[in-house]
Length: 142
Image 1: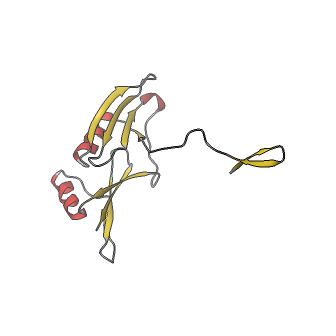
Image 2 (image 1 turned 30 degrees about the vertical axis):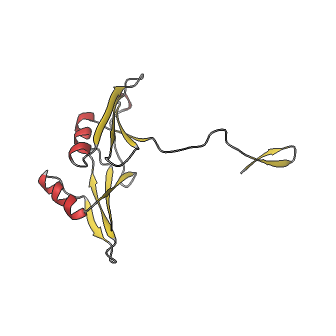
Image 3 (image 1 turned 60 degrees about the vertical axis):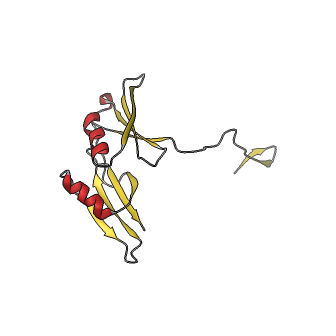
């Protein structure tokens, strides 16, 4: 990519480049219900919570072996959250889909899709739906 200047192209050198992903935001209808889901179903840890200057209530969660955060945002002024099918999803690595399924059974939650195991035995994937309908993918890699 270049920048035209007096009939020639000069390479574009960014002053600052992206270094890492910090967090991903999902807006939710009920912050407490969503935080409970991510904690109880996925085992995420809530690391901070605060209110933004414009009035959003924010909770930040993380997976045990990740640095990236998930920001759950409750902002009623923008209306109810209505997630379209197959719009977006979060994906997490699990040691065993079978064991994760047993965990789900113990708390009364079901996979929304799968598990689907790869024919070569290298792992598989499954989905569970968060309260607003956001899909959460669970991936087993062997």
